Image (cartoon, rainbow, N blue to C red):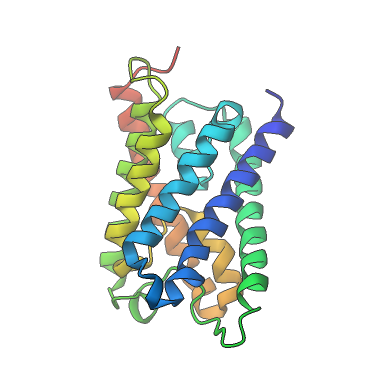
Length: 231
């Protein structure tokens, strides 16, 4: 598959993840009567991955995440020449999704931008968790996310079930991480909303790049030793 098709697939997948996942938090979760709560937001993130992984996974690998892209390279699944183009289009997809989401959300007369589903630590953490707690959570959760991605797509894994397992893993991750960091494990997903939420959130983006990438790189090395590449 040529690079143009692959990066377009990554753009669309990351757009859908950001718009669907963050949109559930910004729009639907703002209405208590809907009762979606943390579980609903977590399911929304998981469903975006499941649906787009089935739709375009055969084209690009369905990473939709710079950290997973780098982890996949570390794990020997993609060549280095694909890493930068994938990341550029993933970030572009997240920013585009956040821009569209802001326009949609602002159509409600009482809309207040607030944190706009952005990630943060300290005062910007939903539960006011400190930097150390947030860093550990993001590293550990991304490590296991990457490990599931590598394991479910390795030789010998049950065929056809990888998108379900990966989507359910993201659902679990978001359930754990919403009170801590507002659930990142994805630098692109963090970057898109932060740009619109304001300087305070942009200033903390370094953590939501460094921690997920660190966790994914370690998982890539472990996965290289643990799993066989797909045939």
